Image 1 (cartoon, rainbow, N blue to C red):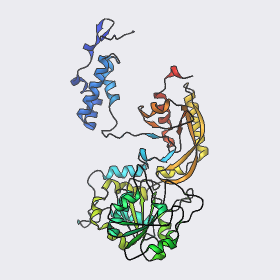
Image 2 (image 1 turned 45 degrees about the horizontal axis):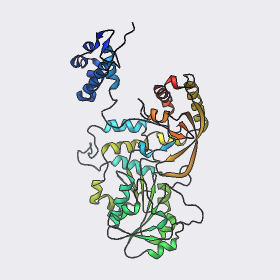
Image 3 (image 1 turned 90 degrees about the horizontal axis):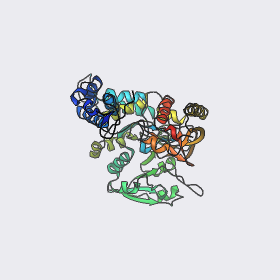
Length: 447
């Protein structure tokens, strides 16, 4: 029967508002009662009120209020929303960089309750915090005699500078005085620790002789920073860790992206093992970039220096929680991470996935086609490196609609089209991606 709801709340002459279920009756719905236990009664009541208001406005029928309230419930109580990263940037900073592996997610869930993070269950006495994660880190980087973990890569460098160079000099090349994003500049970070910077060389050329001339009684260490978000080409010269190790002072190398060992696809990206073998005293890095783990800062190197840094009072303020330690250890010891899988994705398989998606969506009358694409590493790593990829191309209007849809999808605009690059999209998410496109499609507007 055709039922038309008018602006005054009537349907075929009858006031349907009287048929809208009461709040207490709706809250007895099994689905909403379970959600109240999981999300809290306030969240559920808000969804119920919103559904009731939709019925009063004539947007839904009274008998659909309960279903509407269930549909309005968030998946979790947190403010962050899970999104599909179809930007073609594997480590997208605005999207949280590395996606955790299934093993890491399970480890976080296990660690959410009481854990033995600082307790030896065998003896019943206090134990070193994160000892198993640190052991896993040393195993992955054999040249590191010791390791320490803080809350991000910048914190690792701050802790080293504070513990070793407060009131002293840090010698650094002018070509490595970088800005690492959002107006955040490395020189400002280092000076805030109480250290003084001794700049040597020029923007494009700094030799070992430049460093040697600057070394003196006030030198705490030489710092080498990988300019991971840009490249200088042409008439250039830099001194490597091996050369700097001959100067007689500690050498700290900030590799940035968290690569622990050489990667065949990223031959120019520095890694911790190689830098330590070459003579670096300490290496600092990020855990949520090429390592593919949680946000944290890694500090690897000589045992005495690591001990000095880890015992500094600031180390307490920068330490990581049990969830980060759990995720880090699972990342180090578990199966391939989503980051590693995305980097190694076969372009031919990506193309076949794009063709299948395009074919499926075209059958629904959507203006879509499969296209070649170029992805990047992102996260301040491997500048200039492009990864051949494949994408689904849609009309430009899909970009905003997909970002704000039921399952948020973030793509990129290129040549007036919205591209959904598959390089960082796991194959198991293809159907979710297709459904997200369908959910924001207006059939009447498609050609």
